[in-house]
Image 1 (cartoon, rainbow, N blue to C red):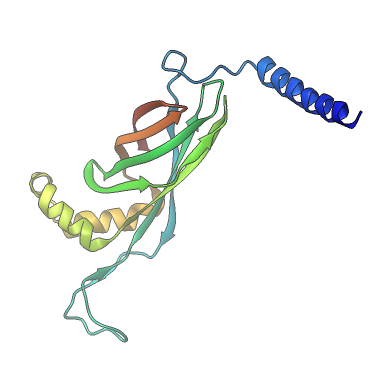
Image 2 (cartoon, rainbow, N blue to C red):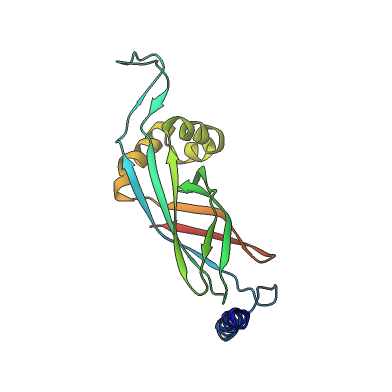
Length: 197
């Protein structure tokens, strides 16, 4: 009698599970039914702001060692990622380049994974830190000719970006974006780009 009760209980659980999942209409992921997720830039936030300053290696600091140091800009890029599929998908790679006024200056990478439920939208926050010295080097190497055409020094250009950052008075461009999605053997790379504001 005890064995029959255990068998009936187990059988009931299996039947309920089959009915729940079967009635839910969740087809298994395949290349044929995988719908491309969308990646949209919601907005950009200036997370930390320290003003505009720079001091060179010859300046004697109050404490510590001298160096070429400048104020950082800490941006957060908030994306909305929508899964149009009838099954959950895994975000397994996310990166993009960043340009201020179309000067390519930085690359952001989100190294974590994230599950996105069927038919839902997740928010993803990715931080990108800008420092005066690396931005200066990037401008001199890749943007020198464009600065010359504009008749602007790299110091003036950077000062504009740092002092006007709280007002978002210049375009911040997300370029070369790539999001990698996976679902039970199906992999899809979705390109994206955006401009804020």
